[in-house]
Length: 232
Image (cartoon, rainbow, N blue to C red; front, side, top):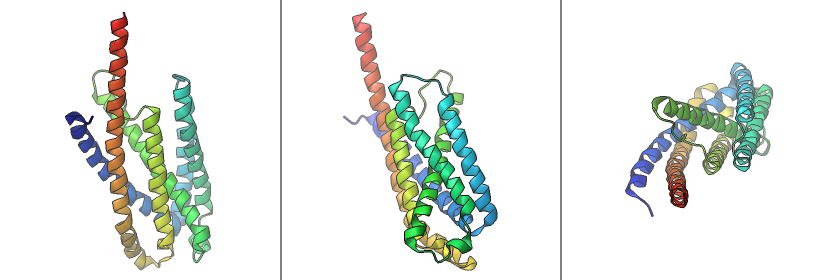
């Protein structure tokens, strides 16, 4: 049953998710443009991706092993995405505008899908980490992180995968990187016309779904705690 608290909190989370989805859409597409047209930014993001992937791997394996299965369930997909980000860094090193100009979409689109997925995941991972740290810093008592359970982690990972893949697909199909310099802005605006609704829809859905999962897990936890107290 949907409670009034879930409707209120879910609406706020959904609205924040819509804003974050639009912002991530803009950042991902601008990043893909810069990687495609600038050797400096291609090198910069290549190093950045490898460093970010390494930090994610370090964060994953430096955490204390919790309840075995749950910890493993969260680490495996995060490790896969971290390796994907490192692979994207390697792609950036080989990404030169003149080499990819005129390349068929069959060969070009998968590269931008991979890069888009990596950028979206890196941004999502950073935002979630920042929100968890901020909430933990602002709250007096120890509180549950914004995203903690395996269900929430899988949901965010799948959303990052879908969102980044769609942005990369649209970017590659529309040949934004092959436009001449004075037309790139117009091509980017045309692409964002399709990407903004995708980012807003996925962001809002994930925001509400995350709040729903949080409420369900808190409700189950309170029921288990109450039953345990009754037995005592």
